[in-house]
Image (tube, rainbow over all chains, first blue to last red; front, side, top):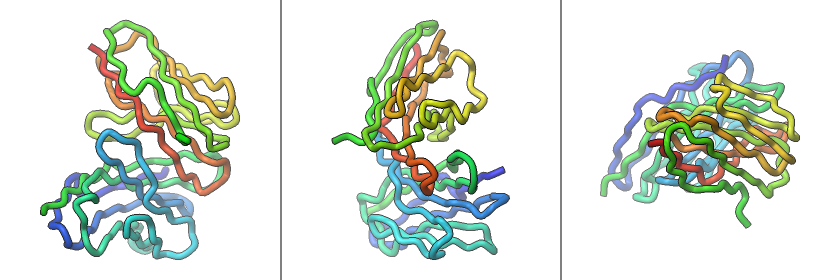
Length: 114
Length: 113
């Protein structure tokens, strides 16, 4: 069965510092992996996705994530945090084949300190 | 030009009432979903329809009944509302057999008193 674990429900970084949000997945087949962002009182929007092409995936707003099969990880990074990055971030996994059930992690709230 | 829209945005009601939430997408997608997000932000899938056919039905009380009149609409009807139903309900859509990207609506904030 597919699952994701996000390490750290809250992460605080200073403005301009590196952002690192951790995600580990479990899947019995090669997975599709996603990062979504949720701003307050809004729906989720896609940051980036991995679909078995390049292992380093670039997304919107300067975010990127690297798929590491040996570590079953898909951590999200951004070199320099902006105040506007403060939001809730969700990692998600979907196994191949059949219909498109996506399982979300429990989320990591990113706080950016001025 | 809204992609996935939901009505109402806010819903405050008494225990025991019946209420409906409507969702529409204009993206031409074949698959639509209902998710429930609780107060701890945990997001759980409830239902999914593909071309009006129910394909995912998670362990959800049968007080919740989805209906898809056409592939652009997926409504959620909730009978006999309970306090624990208070949450944010998100509708989402996805192109069939694409890379499973979900396009989310803005959410409906349900508060049961």
